[in-house]
Length: 147
Image 1: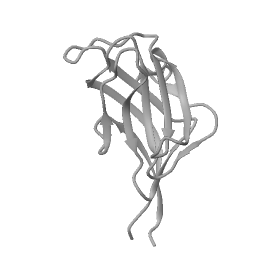
Image 2 (image 1 turned 90 degrees about the vertical axis):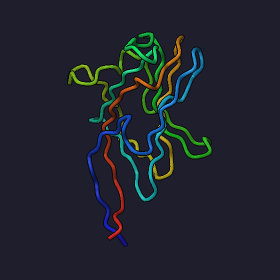
Image 3 (image 1 turned 135 degrees about the vertical axis):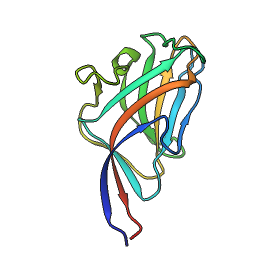
């Protein structure tokens, strides 16, 4: 039996297993999906933050509408059990570097179990292009080692 480890990590568009998809205009679209690996879990604490950049053009940096609705949630593999972790306008989530402007999660620590999916959805009046999507999400990764 392995040991349980805890590791502070930042998920982003380059994280292995991260799936980015385009968002359809006027449709609540799953634009970022990450399945939590087996024998691990993610913990999102009140000290964790999300920074997000979403583009309305696939080749030039033009941001989506500021009032677009962003929803951060987790769900099981069959989408039977879902919990919203954060929801608000795009402007709340777009600060990636300025510490005082970042979006910090609220409430109690939320645990996303193994094989569940962490999803970021966007409802915008424009198409969201995944080619220029950038984000950073700080979490605690709790996993079992092989040793």
